[in-house]
Image (tube, rainbow, N blue to C red; front, top):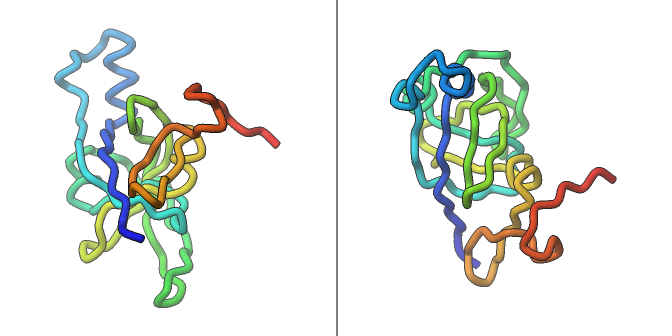
Length: 138
C-alpha cells in the first residue's frame, strides 16, 4: 500500500467573508494550493508555519496532541476554507513541524464525504453516497 496525496486549496476564511460581502476583491483573498498527504490517523488539516503565515490565519489556541513520539503541544488556527475535489469545508488548521508533509486528516475527509481508495491511492467521493454529498449524523 502506498501513500495517498491530494490537491488542497486553502483560503483565509476572514478574507472569503470580506470578498463575499463585497468589501474586498477576489484577489485580496489569501490562498494556497498544495499537495497534502492523506493521514486518516490525523484529525485536522495540518500545514507548515510558512503556509499558515502566508494565509494570515489567526491563532485560536494550543492543544495537546498525541504523536508517535509522545504528547506535544501544537498551535491550532482559526477557520480556513478548505477545498478538495471541488467540495468546500470550513475548518481549523493545526501547525505541523517542517519535517512532515502537509496532512489532511479524517475530519475534513468526513465532512466532505470523501474516502481513500487504498488500491489506487486516490481520494474519491464516497461511493455509498451515490456520487452525491452526504453527511452522517448518527
